[in-house]
Length: 69
Image (tube, rainbow, N blue to C red; front, top):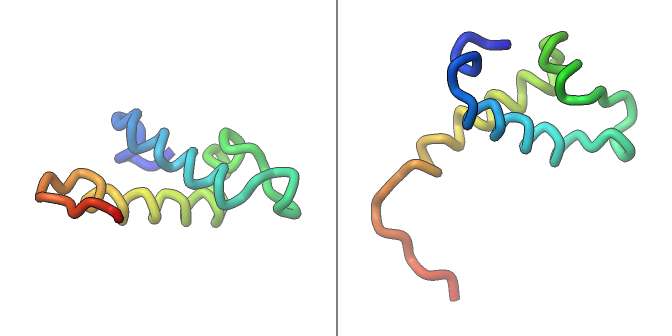
């Protein structure tokens, strides 16, 4: 597990959600379960980590949001 994820349960959960959404086992040939991908540090796992780290500032931004209409 990457150093930053070891102590950040919410970030790890976000990584798992991204991983599971992008690489669903039944539909993605060769995908492995999240825990195994995390242990093996697969490219798919590392890409999910990258996505979560890139999304974190956007999701934690407290500035005013426009209503979706």
